[in-house]
Image (cartoon, rainbow, N blue to C red):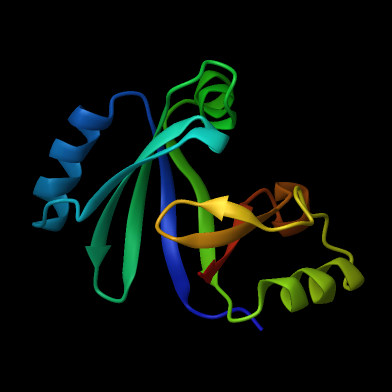
Amino acid sequence: MLGKIEHIGIAVKDLKAANAVYETLLGVTPYKEEKVASEGVITSFFKTGDSKVELLMATDPNSPIAQFIEKRGEGLHHLAFSVTDIDKEVQRLVAAGFQVLNEQPKLGADSKRIVFLHPKSAHGVLVELCEDI
């Protein structure tokens, strides 16, 4: 079963400018900035209540974030949910008809194992499953 919303991912063109906006909006500074080479992004995380906001800026013009921004512009990229057993959740969701983008969990930002569900499986929303390492 999926847990709480772990974070909301927002695609941005300029991480420094976006950080300034979200610092003002949320009233806090990012607690972490991290490069995720496998995804071609630099991320910045803000804590807000029990959840987080993740800003994602492409470091590679062929990365999923760069392609997303080129196609749709900046904005909401994905919703991430915490899970306690990502392998079991992937099996459950695949059996229920969900299409996964990566059946094998991979290392993501903020010390998480991650799997993405195709937006077509969730009414146009990219869903990320996150398990703490």
